[in-house]
Structures are given as C-alpha cells and as structure tokens.
Image (cartoon, rainbow, N blue to C red; front, side, top):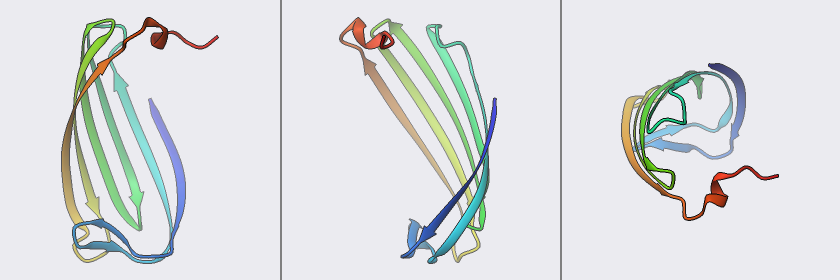
Length: 118
C-alpha cells in the first residue's frame, strides 16, 4: 500500500536533530511517501516491511524498516525491528545515517484486550 502526505512545520528555535547537526529557525514544508507490506496478521510468524521517503527540512530523508513478530500463543508475542534512516540535509553535517533496532515482548493478560469495543 502507498500513502503520500504533505506536512508543514515552523521552528522558532534551532532544532538539534542529531549530534552537532542543527536545523535553523524557519518554516519548512515536506512531501513524504510511504510503502508498507506485511504478511497476514493471523499467522504465528509475521513480517512487515516499511519504506518512507521524500523531502524533509529542505533536504531528504529515507527510512526503511523490517519487523518480524513471533506469536508464541494468543497472549504472548515477541517482535524484532530494525530501521535505517538516511538523512541528506542542507546544513553542515547533514549527510548522515542512523541504524537502530528494538525488541518487543507483548503479554495480554485478558482476552478482553483482544476484542473490539462494541
């Protein structure tokens, strides 16, 4: 599935986006696009792929994420996620990448949390 949107943001103070990289005060507009794909959510092992790209603070930002989830039973699941963010910004030091990962454990103590509200 593909989604696109436009955002605007006004900075009233410099934004320290990463280490010694600052986005100056000003008004910014960006267009972002996103692709997502995932396996069926009713399986014991699930995969999700995510790609977001487009303009960002007068530069570009590409994001890629993969998440694998293992559902041990109806109340316990484990997920591993890794993301790569590639920044290309028109400021000193604005060409950098960040890679991060996360591990999640989800425990549902009651089946009531699994049901939709009426």
